[in-house]
Structures are given as structure tokens and as C-alpha cells.
Length: 266
Image (cartoon, rainbow, N blue to C red; front, side, top):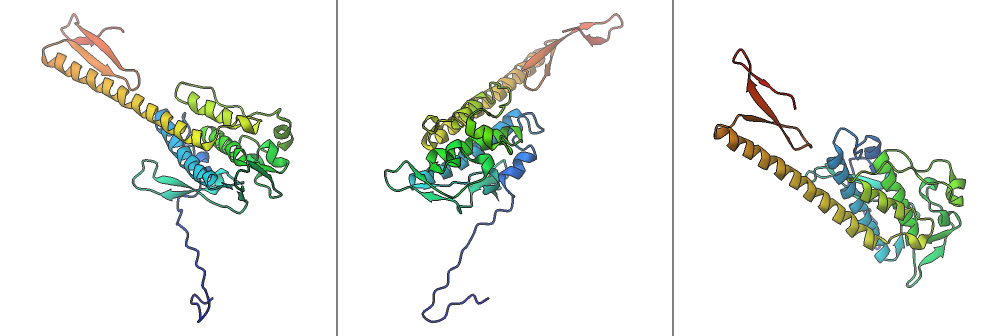
């Protein structure tokens, strides 16, 4: 195939960014965002929040430009290598083959193009497309990132009837704000779903608070360690034992009958 245009001809070249880290679905299946997994709850939760924020930012840009993606799902969120991010990647929303343009001042349109059934909102099955349909898909993605499992699978009738809801994991203080946001995104009434102009700053706020809590915990452990070191330097007899995530426990030592030292019960 020729890559040069002749005189009076135009050559259209499409240049795409290399996304060598597969897609968001593969990362979720590997447990990258699993708060009960090998990375630990706080690291996994922050990775989830940062990835979700990048998706929300992309959708906010599209919606502000009058475009509905129409087929938002983990397989359409590609991962680009990033050596500057602790995750090792950043998220890029892709595949606009089913995107729809919303005319000015129009909130929804009737469309014939279908997205992927597992991520479609109830109204989308009836041909109604709006910004809120993307929000529903985003809510399904949040669920899958947290659980590593599909929210809906071959159960279209239940979604349409509104009788089927994903079983969110048990809420803990760490993940409850994300669960609450995900549930709002999956509201059956499109008008009850938050816009991405609210979703994105909410995700940023949750991550900032989570990071601040982590730094405060680290500072507390460091301060306790310094206090213990100072006590020992001053001739104290208490030996600290640090336990990750649980602050500091103290072991009191007493003299044994043979002159040895042994820890007393706690």
C-alpha cells in the first residue's frame, strides 16, 4: 500500500498512542484493585480511585463537548505505560464507534446503536441515549473494579425490570464512599444519577482524604518510634513492638529468677 499522496491527492494518516498495558478489565481480573488482595487495602483503593478519576475526567470532557460515548466498559479503557505513576499506567478511554452527538440543549436522543449489554442502562435498551447512560456504565465499572466480577451477566430482563441489583461488597470506612457513589451511578432513574462534573471532584476528594489518613497514620507510627527510641536512650526499660496498622504495643520486661529478661504477658 502506498504511503505517499500524489499530486492533488490527500493522504489521511491515523496516529494512535501505544497502549501496551492491555485494558482495565485485565487489570481488574488480576486483582489489581482488590482491597483484600496482595497490594493491601489502601494501595488498591487509591489505584482504583485514580483510575476512576481518569475515566471520569475523559467522560466529563466528552459530555461538555456534546458527545455520549455509548459503549463505556473496561475493555474500552486502555492502559498506557507510565513510569511516573505508582500504578505503572494511566487510563485512556477508547472506541468511539457507538458514540452519539447530542445537539445543543438536547438532554437525550433516540438511537438505534446498541452498546455492550452488560453495561447498558435500562433506558438504553429502549433506545434512549443521554449523558446519564454513560454514568450507568461508569457505575458498573466501579463495581467490577472493586470486586473483579461482572455486575450483570446475561440477565438483561432483570436490569430492565429494575429487580436486579449488583451485590456490592460489605462497606468498610475505606471503601464505603466509593460504594455510595457507585450506587448513585446505578440509579434506575437517569435523573438521579450524578453528572461527571460532580463525580470527578468527588473521586478526587475521596483520594485526597484517603492519602491524608495514610500520611497521618505513618506520622503517628514514626512519632511513636521516635518516642520509644528517646525512652530507651534515657535508660527506660520498656521495649516497643510495632505492629503495622495497629499503632504501638508495649512489652514490659521483668527480671527472671536466673537473671535473664523475658517479656511479660500483654
